[in-house]
Structure formats: structure tokens, C-alpha cells
Length: 361
Image (cartoon, rainbow, N blue to C red; front, top):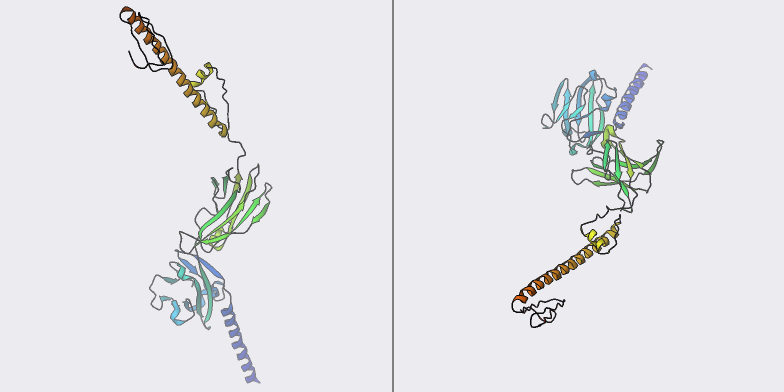
């Protein structure tokens, strides 16, 4: 009876240890995101949860990417830490909390890490943790490309052009890993919000290796009052800033385009003296060119008329002078190319027809 009781007790202890070990192996330890290019720390779930006290740990191994002897990264044995399998010092370390320290996180470090712990007077226990590399997006984020004035980190104004029929707002988060999610909300004056769209597009970034750019666009309904829209971003790449948003005040001006009045020039008073009526007023763009063209044409006509008058007056003066000279001596005949006929008489009564004769004296 006693021997049978001891055998049953031993079996219970073995089964209990196996159950504990199976539970440790099958435990889902979650995922940790570490920033690329920075040092990162991975905690062993068995130690972080308090299942194994720090002062009870005698031996510890960290493995990657599989739980094999050839994949040991670094070990701890009774106070001594040493890299394994030819890995140089300074790549990995084990800190005072028995966490694995990755000195410089790279994309190739993504995967599952295994920790094997030997507590005092106990068997080896295994745990694992999954690590993913993250890249924080560029500032500012999220960003609305139509914003013309940045008021603060979370607010901006967007003046939408009148000549675009389909007005849109585009929210974007650049160069993030993993890709973030975006959604658009309509904000009311009383603080309530309404979901407009949670659809977005993800594309590989053009200027950052192994990162992604997320964008989301919505149409803007024409309104005579300013409208508030909010773009929100979600994702592991945002870390503590998960849920960041930017509020956009969208507005546009409903007006007819006018131009400045055409100011009177030096030719305009002359136009009035010649009997032309004119008024100066604001005109749309389509009428401005016609007014300018008419003004130029009238100015040119006025210049031609003034030139002809000056030429005729000059010709008359020259003719009178030559007529006076001819009365003292021999008769003078002067013929010029002109459409004006001016009779000139000398002592012998000769008449010069300026229209028919040319350049003969």
C-alpha cells in the first residue's frame, strides 16, 4: 500500500511538471515592435510575468531564429554573460532583468526569439517572444496635402480653388513600417463626429527602404460655411501616438472675379475733344480686352489725323513763304506728292496742280 501510494505521488509530480512545461511552451507571448536603427530590448515572458524570480535564475540562453544549439545568441551562467556561436561582442547582451538587448535593430532581426531558463532546483523552462521591426513615419503625420496654412500640430486650413469641379482632401502618412490605417471623420460644431470613409491605399515608399505610404482621399461638398474634417491614423508604427489626427478647416471663396478700373490716359481727353463719348467702369475680364483694343485703335486714328493736320499746315506755311519769294523775283512752282490741291500763281499766271505733278520745281 505504501509503495503504491509513493508511486502514485511520483506520477502526479511528473504529470504536474509536464503540464507546467507544456503550458510554458504553448503560451502565446505576443509581439514586440522595436524601432529600426535603435537599440531594442526583448523580455522573456517567463521572467517578465514573475513566474520565475530573478534571484532563482542560474542559467539562461537566448536563441534565434530556432530553438537549437547552433542558434544560441548569448548565454548567462552564474553571473557570466558570453556571446555564442562566433557572434562578436556588442551585438547582443543580457541585462539585469535577463532581457535580451539588441544593440542595433535591423530588418533581418525580425522573427521569433526563444529564451531557455534554468531556475534553482528546477528543470529548464522555455518561452518565446515575436519581434517585429517598426519605422516611425515622417513628421508631420497625418498630413493633408491641400492644407495651405498649418495652425498647429493637429490643425490646419485648406483653401480649395474655385476652378476645380471635384474638390478632394487627401490625407497621407509617409514612410512607416508597418503600414498605418487612415480614416476620415466629419466634425460638427457640438463636438459630434460622423465617419465619412475608412478606406485607404497602401503603397511602397519611394524614398525609404522597406517602408510604406498610406493615403486616403474624400470628396468635399460645396458649402458657404467652413467645414471641419478630421483625418485619424492608427498603427503599431505610431507607438504612443497611435490615433494621431489632424483637423482640417476647408473653405473656398464664392465670388465673381473683377479687375481694376481702366484709368484714363492722355489720349482719352483728346477722344472727348474729337466728339467721342466714353465711360470708365469696372468690367469683367471678357470685356477688358475689347475696351483696350478700342482705346488703342482710337489713339492710332487720332495720331494719324493729327499727323495729317500738321503736314497740311506745314505745307501751307512753306507755300506761302515760297510765294512771297516768287513775287520778288521769278515765279516759283512747287509740286509735292499730296492728295491736297493748292493753286499757286506767279507773275505769269502759272498754276501748279499738286495732285498731278510731283517733285518738280
